[in-house]
Amino acid sequence: MPHSARKKSESGYYHVVAKAIADQMIFESDVDRRYYIKLLDTATTETCCTLHAYCLMSNHVHLVIEDNFDSLATLMKYVDERYGMYFANKTERNGGIFRKPFWSESINTDAYLLCAVRYVHANPTVAGICSPFFYEWSSAKDYMGRNGITDTSKILAMCGNTDSFVRFSNQMPACAQAFPGSKLIGHINDEEALRVARLTLGANELRSIGSLPISDRNDAIRKLKQTGLTLRQIARATGLGYYTVRVA
Image 1 (cartoon, rainbow, N blue to C red):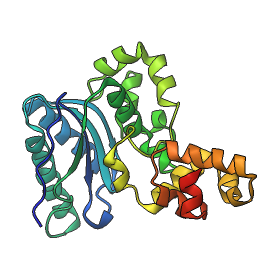
Image 2 (image 1 turned 120 degrees about the horizontal axis):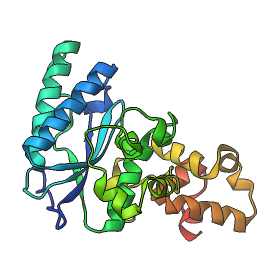
Image 3 (image 1 turned 90 degrees about the vertical axis):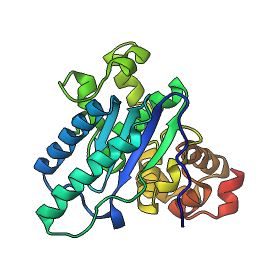
């Protein structure tokens, strides 16, 4: 089945997700991660794109990229092919390792841009690894002063300073989607959705949600809706009926 054309961003900003085929692991060591980051740095320079955020997880990568020269596909092809060849040779595999085409979504307002950066950095928290600013393999530490590959100037200017950026980042660490209306939610599986629900409500409240008074139960459901989880994901994570979730 042919893929539909990628929608061009009016602002030039994109949230990009590169996922592994069959969700296989694509980073086995820090050497792998450093090599990917090196390729990403080279690709952004050669295509005149600007990298505003990134996060390397075990089986996928998140990026926030500014592309004013229609070079995003070239950038991703450069990184995909070179890292894929490196990893295939290392692990003695055949074929590529990333799904094609890569997923991307336009970011057309400043509010969406800030929320997308926050979402990218929150991935280790959602996965139960650590808080964003303790994670080595994202741009969060670049925003704290590390000399990395990320251009942090625009986002920090929008927030005011580093302290304001940290406060903004910690407001919704368990947010499941990059920003309201994002189609990224279609890429969240049930296991990830359950982690988001636990982080949002707490494991005890999530476990007992069915026995809460109706007003308290509906408040909890509305909190889950604000994360961007679909109604059916909330129903599966809570064990509640779809109608109960929909009308809350």
